[in-house]
Length: 186
Image 1 (tube, helix red, strand yellow):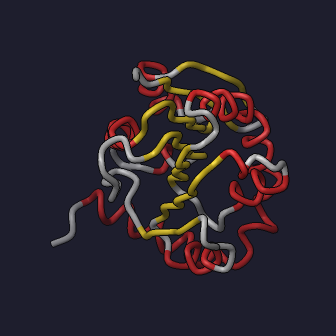
Image 2 (cartoon, rainbow, N blue to C red; image 1 turned 180 degrees about the vertical axis):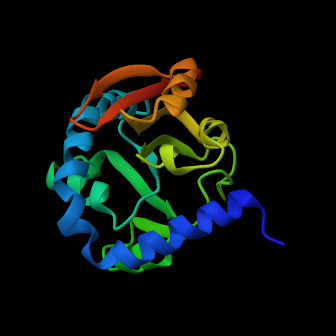
């Protein structure tokens, strides 16, 4: 028998499989606004690792964030980019953008398939609001990351925001989202 949490995740996975082909056209402007708002925190976190870090994108979708950092020449400051997503449809689109310095893996944000402190910086844009147990994702993000976790949450997701505020600091917002950074001790 499937648990309630997995039922919720399966519905989300199927929804994103269906929207994956048109995702970029539908949501790229909204996503780029979040990326712009969190750019300074990302750059600060990369400076902490001398610009030679591994970036983990939790809920990477079609790799729009990777395209964003490539266009701004930030990718030169990242040794490797790993994208994680639950949706096979999103990953199929993302794989078209993968190269020798990046990879994508199907994964659940509440159970990341990475070793402790593997990543220098983690980002996750509007994934936490979709999860049955957002605190598990926060815990996993902190487990796999060395310097900072940058997380966005929908403004209307007040139940999630209180949890993020306990571990993170407000850094900005867009029309729909609030963005936080959780700085991690060395």
